[in-house]
Image (cartoon, rainbow, N blue to C red):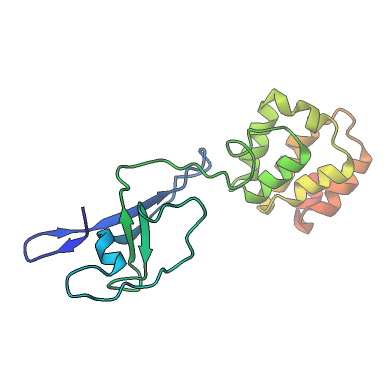
Length: 195
């Protein structure tokens, strides 16, 4: 269980982090080498009487130091030392947008703008929201400034005209004011296509 390096056997541990992107791209992965040690090592009670290293970070509220201990790196600056009874593999879901399931939450303009700000593909995000009937009211009520705000979040210039067309088709009160707002929101060389 503890990290060990011997003549014939090496035991090492790696913290694997995988970010699930809900289909926007491949799920990026990262591996961080860690060293697992016994609680005696961390508390300084190991053979030889070495002093225990100081904690490398403050202990979070609710953590039981009898179960999880941390210490400064033991061998190399890139290896963190952890002790405790963590075993197995567990998926931890982190919502970077504050919206359930990468934007599938409550349908609001603010939620859409927040999602577009973190989206890898604004065209895919807009297409998914247009296909979801829960978002019809959001698109139907877009004012010119709202339409411009959406287009302003599209970071890939080549997608701006197509997204403008996609969103415009869902606005029943689409007017010249929407066109003017879009004209000022998109990149200069895309303006002709948007009009």
